[in-house]
Length: 218
Image 1 (tube, rainbow, N blue to C red):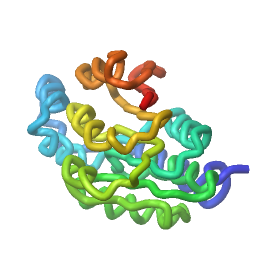
Image 2 (cartoon, rainbow, N blue to C red; image 1 turned 45 degrees about the horizontal axis):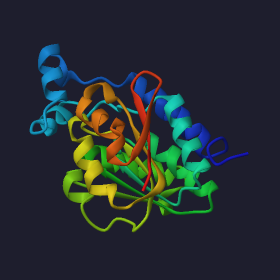
Image 3 (cartoon, rainbow, N blue to C red; image 1 turned 90 degrees about the vertical axis):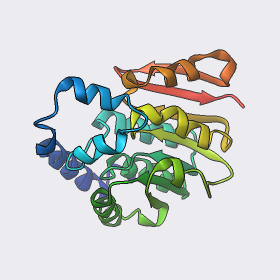
Image 4 (spheres, rainbow, N blue to C red; image 1 turned 180 degrees about the vertical axis):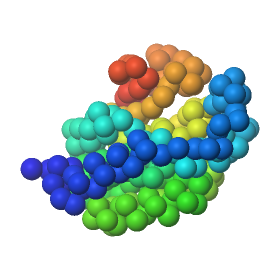
């Protein structure tokens, strides 16, 4: 038995996925597909886009959540950084791995206050709040300071155009063998080019349709 598959997390995670699937965002109704695509690739207007998306959960898929748990467990992760907490579904999967690894810390970043409030409730309900610190604000600020000296796993699941910038902030903390998991990488070709280039210190492979798993070499 694992923390992920027993109470209170098992029922909580299933309930949250049900809520996530029912969420809507009326603010997007008047935004064209072309404008959404432009905002997804913008490094300067991402707060405008994610303000419109504040009612959407934007969680990792169920399979990706399980993958995160497996990767964190298999690497015996003790320190995890998460870019893009949203309502906390990926956070709960990673925290379950930390618990089953014997403890540790997960530092998350989210700039939407309403999401942070609910994410904090969810981690309390899941019994893992002692493992989690959610920092409020822009990740380019909140993740630029006071990180663990050694980070075992980095999850990138916030504004896609900033993946490379967030990686640069955390990179010096990544231990050899640390993993970087990036979701929705079809929106960030520059990031993919960086981690797939042999001279940048990673071994990287695509997983499923739009996930990239990279290992830090040194």
